[in-house]
Length: 124
Image (spheres, rainbow, N blue to C red):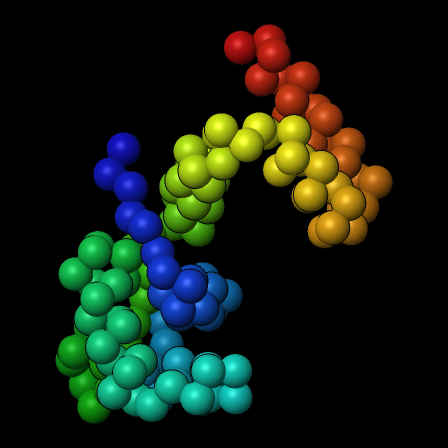
């Protein structure tokens, strides 16, 4: 698996593209402006970095560049999960699950889903 690691800022851009795509650089800049204050130049730089990683496709035809995700959200989440679990392995998985259930306010349905996934993992 060719995993693509994303920075926090790259996650912000990718989430916008996963929600609605394609988007122009201007649309992305406007959507991120209040939260980040990023200029069009910053958004362009980050999009180019994402394109170099193979996470984003940029179509330069027309008057505005159109950007779309090439990296699937599920693949990015899987890579992030593996990376996080690899970093905390020495601390124990139980601490992660405890933090998720207590601090994240998982719903009963989400806890049931987690329980089901863990039972399935045991079978494998």
